[in-house]
Length: 177
Length: 131
Image (cartoon, rainbow over all chains, first blue to last red; front, side, top):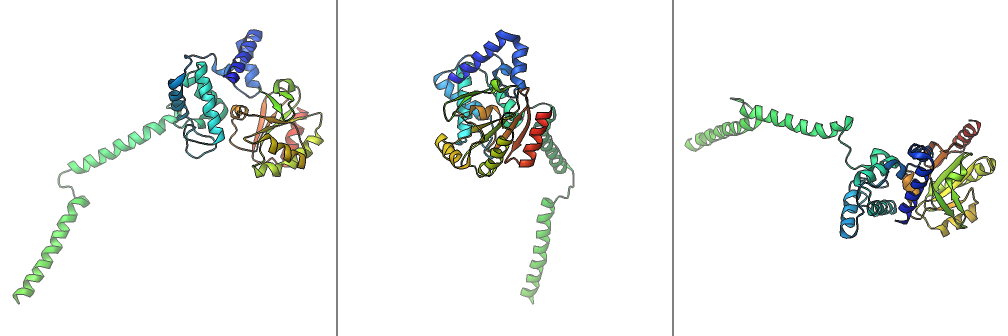
């Protein structure tokens, strides 16, 4: 809280002294894009169990930058723990999950999101698996419905029966002789 | 923008350093590439003394261990204590060492992940000083 309050104070000072655009320009020109870019808190400050729950929810959407395939919520590394604590401070100050993800995205890029945003080129990630599933289903349905289809599943029992018949005929001959 | 204290308690504000190139290096004593890189930064900080500001930000490490190593190997700049890792997070640091180069206007112009080579460092600083 102390840190976020300090950041908010900085934003207020920058905004009152030079206008919003100056504040954004000053922050971004230094390379650290902080709260000036995510604006004022757009939600309500969270506390208690709700704060714990939402902290976990938002952290689970974020990729731990020093792990492989772990979310910030699941990782025990100091960096992930620090990031989770920042998420908690943001939520306690009233920032929304969208604002928080935007803040971390400014530092780490879209990499920080465990699930890519469903827009632009990323849409392929969401659409392709569904399209592939539907195409597969269509192929299966067409083969199943085709009359007299000779798929492997249909041929296999017939081949086995034929071999068995040959074997039985041989047995009959040997028994009768 | 950040304001941090070094091991001696002196406060450094990035905003106050505007006007000269700044090198910010995130490092730790547990990081072997950081140890390998240390002499390179010591030499560069001496070569560019008064023209380029070198700042070290301690990344997930104990200040006492940093102090001991600096005593052994020499200092190339103040070692700033980023206790809650907030500066490293704001810079999008993935691990140590990572070095950020900021021009006199306050814009990050380059970032090196892993140990920075002497030649690359010199070339970049010369380019920053001449622009």
